[in-house]
Length: 164
Image 1 (cartoon, one colour):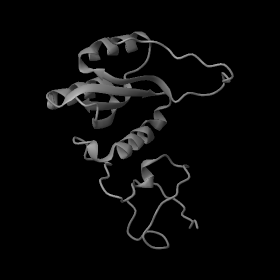
Image 2 (cartoon, rainbow, N blue to C red):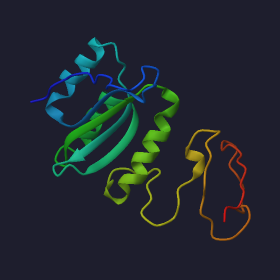
Image 3 (cartoon, rainbow, N blue to C red):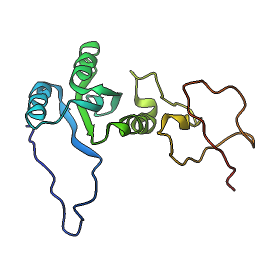
Image 4 (cartoon, rainbow, N blue to C red):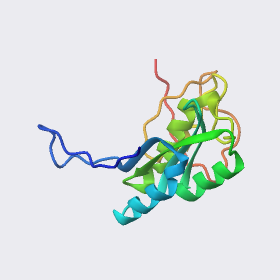
């Protein structure tokens, strides 16, 4: 059984606090995909965000962002025997979608069988440029000083200072 609802602001929480998500769903069976899509559309919430496809044990196997229901349906079609559940997160501000997706992919790590991008299966750090410009970062490097090598033209510049 799948139910829907809306979270209410708790006592003592100011109304001015912004929220990160418009809608969330966690580990729903793929059988209710179309019903949930229709309910979301009826509530006036768009179908773009971050989605996660899970196997029968609830382990995330694919994480992505974009048209949630279209992409989940194509993932299920490509891997019908492996995928049983899905989750999604509709982000309030589209600018943060990529950051949330990157965070989920890096946290899931090696369990993602169908993801090839951004996945890290070693202790090597990810690229800080996967996050929005203006974000303060702390990065582990093998040697002191700036990294050597060229910066791709589409990557933003960053300032680096050593932290002790």
